[in-house]
Image (cartoon, rainbow, N blue to C red; front, side, top):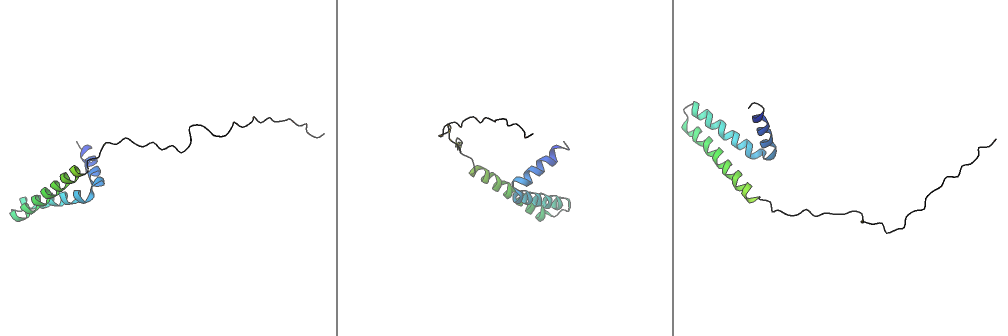
Length: 97
């Protein structure tokens, strides 16, 4: 459990940092308001976290990707238009004596 929570938090903050910060702020306000018997701060925190979660759900539903086949782009032709090059032969020269 200890290894799962930090990974989840890191991935959430990397993907959508603004929404993650707003949710964290709302939850912290709600916790502080709950322990301090400040019901207005508790309600404000829950409202902030709730509105942010609704915003996140609404944005994810708007961004549903359409399944498209990837376009393959070839940079080189499948066959060469020029003829094959002749084979090179190395002639052995005798060193000077």
